Image (cartoon, rainbow, N blue to C red; front, side, top):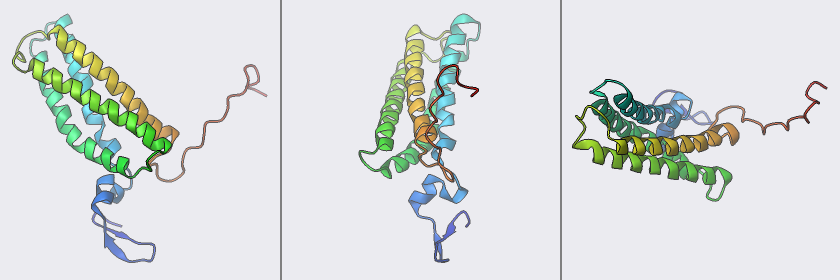
Length: 182
């Protein structure tokens, strides 16, 4: 197995398909999870810089936040296609697809909120203090982002979607209170 070729069960060597490549199969683990960290961190960082510009003296924070949002959009250019390839491979109507639909809807909502935030702030990006509307939009965006990430976590940690090797088992029922040590 290499970056461009794999071996079939019968021992034949073949090129990875585009779908397999996008999914991260040549590197041995899903690629979507590698890319989502960038937009997540940059959206949260933009909100943090906007808040810092209001409570402290950091006049370049709103401009930096504006660029962080653009960076999040750029990071999404990798996270979105890799997630969509995984989504298309899910069985319609399955539990995984239903959870993924929630994840997808919340992430699209987040992106939409930050697109509006970027449009609203662009002409004032050099102001020394973030406008209250930017902070409100950023906070709403981070809340929807967090909810969307929760559903992404459900896909991996509860359902075991795209987890190689042993799949997680269902959580054991907790023992009744007071019977933990028996």
